[in-house]
Structures are given as structure tokens and as C-alpha cells.
Amino acid sequence: MNPIDATFARLRTENRRAFMPFLVAGDPSPEGTVAAAGQLARAGASLIEIGFPYSDPIADGPVIQAAYTRVLGRGLKLDAMFACIEQIAALPEVAGKVPLVGMVAYSLILRRGLDRFLDQAKQAGMSGLIVPDLPLEETTDLAPRMAARGLKMILLVTPTTPRERAKRIVAAATGFVYCVSVTGITGEREGLPDELTAQLAWLREQTSLPLCVGFGISKPAQARALRDHADGIIVGSAIVRGLVEAPETVPALAASLVAALGEP
Image 1 (cartoon, rainbow, N blue to C red):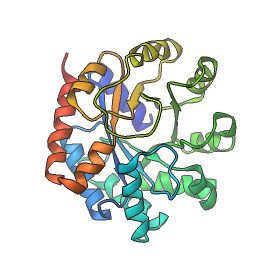
Image 2: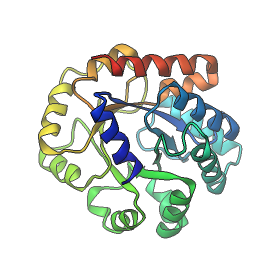
Image 3: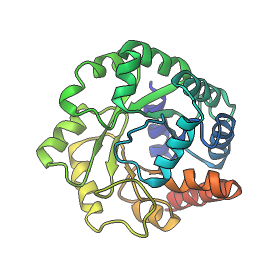
């Protein structure tokens, strides 16, 4: 069983929701990324999403864009990013316990070559990939290659995705469905849209896959509000910003989010 499937099956039996922090490979440094992953795993992360820095991010807000710029400015190459991920996968707190999911632009995969990139992702210890700039209709080359390697293809549904299209997306997705909470870019927000719970309820009728909500989540109150509607939350900008501005606060933030998701 793929580690993502196993993790959500376990969480379901425990009546818990997944906390999935997002890290940028190589930020604040390769060593810092590895250390942060260990801290987040110890704080209760169920999965860890790792972004591959790219010069033209699709929907990332200023915090994550700045992190990508820092990494690329230091000249970190793709092989070094894979090496960073491999070190994370080997951590005692992560190995066999916390699946790793990559967020990567399709152009990076295409430039490296589909088979070579996927082989490296698998070897580095990844369990699935999110490729946000690859339309559903153009996954025909990538999807079977991922399936052959036991990698999950996680697809996104946004608030503006037409419902007929959303049905096709969740039918093709594996691992979990990435439910974008708001229209726009990533970043911390004070609140979440009222229509999000209705969107999640509708998606729940379309698929048995776990539903994980990302974009705009940074506070325990937001996690608590989603507990009865989603199977997990994805927290990016607050983690990435914290690692640069106040790294000592990140484990406490993670623990508070885990606690909020675990409350009955």
C-alpha cells in the first residue's frame, strides 16, 4: 500500500485529521529544510509537502515566491533538491511514518525527462506529486508512469472549477484531492470563505478520496473549523515565513494545529 493511503487509513481509524506542512526544498538552507522536517514530524505532521523552487510559480504568494527566489539565487540545482528530500526521507521521525509529497512545476519534470524525474522522486523517498500547472487533459503521459512507480498523482480542485470538470478531476486523482480554499494565490488569511464547507460537502459526494484543504490556512481556529469537513489541512506560508523570521516558533505552531485537528 502506498504510504499516503496507509496514513489516511490510519488517521480514519483514529478519528483524526492530517496536518500537512509545506516546506521549500533548500530554504532556509538544505540543512535547515531537513531539520525543519524533523521538527514538524515530531510535532505531529501526518504528511510533509515539499516544493521544488521554480522561477515562475503558478499560484504561490509572496512568501513562497521569496523562498523560491532565495533558493534559486544560491544556485541550488534539481539534484541537490532531491538530495535534500532523500535526507528528509531517511530521518528516523519520517522514515516509514510520514509520507513526502512533492509540489513541482511540470516544466521541471519535462526538462529532466518524465522517467528520469519520476525515478529520482521515487528513489528520494517521495510517495506522490502535485503538478499544479498540468491540466487534467494532459496527464496522459505522466499518470501511467507515476502509477507504474507507485506514486500518487494528487490533483487540485479550486472554487472556480466547474462541477462537471471537478468530477473528472477527482475521478482521475489518487492519494487525496487538494482542495484550494480560495480564489487567488497562497498566503495567510484571517478567515476562510463561507462557501468552502458546501464545496467540501459536494466533493465528498463525488469521491471516497481524502479531501485536504490548502491556501490561506495558518491558525488553529481555521483548522478546528475544517475538522468536520475535511480529512486534512495544508499549511504553507505560515511555516515558510516562520522558518526565516522566527524558527523557534514553528514547532509550537505545528503542535497547535495538530491539537486543533485532533479535537473531537
